Length: 312
Ligand code: NAP
Image 1 (cartoon, rainbow, N blue to C red):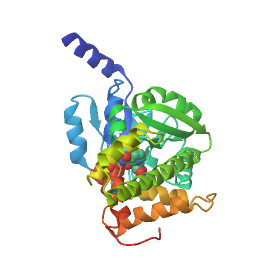
Image 2: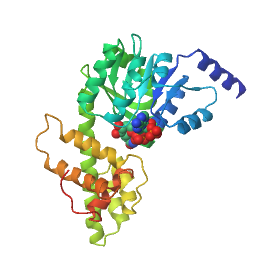
Image 3: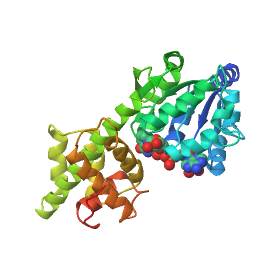
Image 4: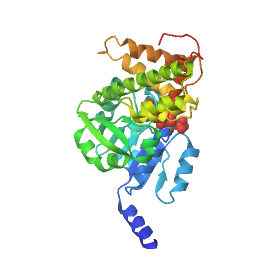
């Protein structure tokens, strides 16, 4: 054991550091996965308590940087997992922010779910400073982030994507390079989340009907799990929705954000079913105050516990 620890410490001391910015629900799991490479990690996150707590769990492996620019300064590649376009804009452009750290030899890999045009704009500004840029939004939630089972959809600088193979490999089970044009991966991510959000509403409405019919939710779940609709999401969220357990893995406000982004894509045709599903998330967020709950709290809107709002 002592020998193993010594070898691990030696490997760590000679390895290049990797950067991580944004230690929220997803970022915490992803950053922990990167440590297993093993690589020293330089991190910055707004919430210093979270950063200190993680650093304390991995003595000698994590450097808490004073700013986003300081993370980038210390690392060849820096991953970002922030929340919204507004937050990304703030962290990129603030004093000692992301853009200030960018220069030739520095790569930014942004994993947030934004609009394609947000990613394109961030990428252009990173490149204008000589850095390279890959957008890498993910499919998968809190548990897949912690277990290294995310699916990365990537676009941008191909050489950076290839250089990041080991890091993406330890955080995810699959990485798809969509295009050298930034925005294409985000388009794919928004399509995936539109399907996911709409599918979850269909499950919620089915469970509501089953309840009205006094059917056993356990029996309904058992049938679903054995049939053609079986999926990890149905298996995970069905039992939670049946007992109204909305412990947060994917905040409902972010599911709503993504569905609105998808519906507002320039190329989007009329998508009436997806639009109706989005309206239920909007009701759960606006009227139900459930934005910070898990997105399966859309169940409350589906069962009519929240208003009759139908506009998204
Ligand atoms: P989250 O838990 O809300 O974390 C967001 C991160 O952004 C936190 O580190 C947060 O810092 C930081 N942040 C927020 N406002 C900030 C500000 N004004 N200045 C600086 N930092 C700020 O979100 P998440 O669930 O990890 O999701 C991150 C992204 O991944 C989102 O775009 C989401 O749509 C996407 N995504 C999420 C999931 C999921 O299941 N959760 C799955 C796939 C994709 P604080 O801790 O200080 O608030």
